[in-house]
Length: 182
Image (cartoon, one colour):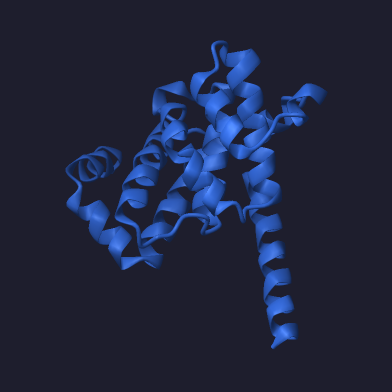
């Protein structure tokens, strides 16, 4: 049993590495992390910096970069993501009209990583609504890989959880956003 669990965890790590590779975007690679960006603290502190940062390029973008790297390196941070209300903050930075801004690129990447790697519990209606709206905005942006990955993430959320699907279908705003995209 221990070996099976080890194999399962190794496979999950390989899958996360593949997903991380898919989410890499030339725009993300072109923005070099500064040494001071790597010294930032917890997901909670970084979320707060993303939410409250005064200057987009000096405060919010470094926080988004570091969050992206932290989540890409260790997606098993569900509790921290939920406690910090990161999904709510990402919604502010993933509106379709914000593409191709680097903050949009990173925020979209974070949201796609979270959704594609099961870091949110699909059965929670509140979570479904919180994550569905920004994913729909990313899809609507039609921006490079982010849009395609958001579409895949949304499909995965719907397919993996009947409560999520029911929640989304019963939310008028989500239904209207889907109709606009189609």
